[in-house]
Amino acid sequence: MNIQTPIITARAALYLRVSTVRQAEHDVSIPDQKRQGEAYCSSRGYQLVDTFVEAGASATNDRRPEFQRMIEAGTSKPAPFDVVVVHSFSRFFRDHFELEFYVRKLAKNGVKLVSITQEMGDDPMHQMMRQIMALFDEYQSKENAKHVLRALKENARQGFWNGALPPIGYRTVAAEQRGAKIKKKLEIDPLHAGTIRLIYRLALEGDDQSGQMGVKAIVKYLNRRGIFTRDGGRWGIGQVHRVLTRRTYIGEHQFNKRSKSKELKPEAEVVIVPVPPLIDRETFDAVQELMQARNPKTELPARVMIGPTLLTGICYCGNCGGAMTIRTGKSGRYRYYACSIKARQGETGCKGRAIPMDKLDGIVAGHIEERLLDPDRLEETLATVLDRRQEHSERRREHIAELNRRSAESELRLKRLYDAIEAGVADLDDPALKERVAGLKVIRDQAKLDAERAEAMLDSAGHKAISPAMIRRFSQAARERIHLEGGGYRRDHLRALAQRVEVADDEIRIMGSKTDLLRALSAAQGGKSAVIGVPRGGLKWRRGGPPKCTDITQLFLKVTVEPQRLPQRR
Image (cartoon, rainbow, N blue to C red; front, side, top):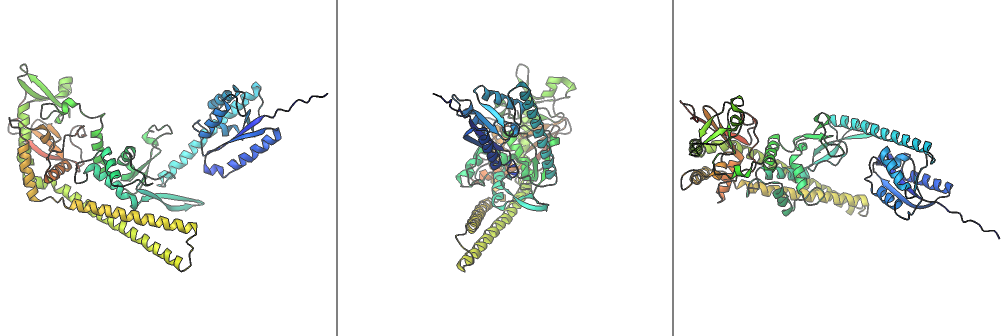
């Protein structure tokens, strides 16, 4: 009696992968890999039990869902298959170390990796050949990436967009055609540009009912009022922070800024792509200063901001730019503001100065009270800010007109489509026509909603006109509140009016923010305290003096001390 030995058929799993959509259109497409894989299994007598398809994933790392699912199955006990079939080893991995790692990991569980186009044996010679091929695949992958990046950088230098989703507030438009390729550029998207401008206005000026807003407050403001993102979602802290720090909005899109690991690249490798600006540079720079001031990593110590002294934290040496800190004499009987650079480095660092604390406090507070808070000077000081607000209002009106025009244009196109449907020229059941009608409705409704919101903001801002009577009331109230009942001055009220004091040999420069001053005045009009609060991190200043930008920080007062020099510590 003859006993036949049963034929054991190896079980196989196919792993199919392409990196990009473009690659899928060539001879290594998913269907082609699948066809060749099935034919290979059939010719070898393998039983095909599973197929893992990875579309649009790089083989330079293992962050691939289907790859991980295949490895998990291949290393489980018992394994559901005996062989993993790939078109080539580069479909499995383009990193020679990772390739060997996963080949050995599968082998430990009795699962073998085979290639349709690169058949190898199990002897040491073939293992070495597989490793050499993997090295060549890795080298080719890196060379291809280098050439692709070079082409993308050149495309960016010419001002073209490289295909990623544009930042909210922009959209892509066809710029020119080169052969079969259509080059695209960015243009301002009128549907969402108003939202970006609103975010910057909230950060810099507030909503006419509150002061400058931080990122969290802006997120709450937008979500509470139903102002959604481009895809109709709710805003998050990260999204708003990116909007407020992205240089694209001032016309300087940065391409190739970060590596795949999200690390910043050297400035020499970054390409600046010119795009239409949504935000003026002065507004952008002002917002960066405010965000830097709120950054907990750069804020001043709490003891400096809430200490008993009037000018600690905002008083600086006019000679070297170093902070002036408190020094005492005669066992604490006398207190001085003294240059900290001189205290640490001696006269080699700065010739320094030391001024009696009560004397400097009196000079600064007295000049703020008598000169800055003079109604005529206040009106003169705020003139440029009010002019800028008027310019913003005019730009907002132009934006409203553009939104209304876009809404009316979409409504007219919808009417033409409806007329064509009624006349029997067009079929409403046509999917393309349905999609077109839905798109026009979205554009019409969104433009109308944005225009109404912009008009409401414009009307709200219009009721905040600054009058001479308001300035006089603010001046009187601020002069009263700056004084303490028992003598001295209120620290919080003074810092609402001045954010930096520089002490030179023969003059004192008192500087502050015109925007903060205007907010304090607006708050007083609404019956609130004129105090706008103490900035947590202070203003950012260049060494040796205030910045040249005259939008946010301005020289309010210059106190000249003559004929003698400022009193020095003996």
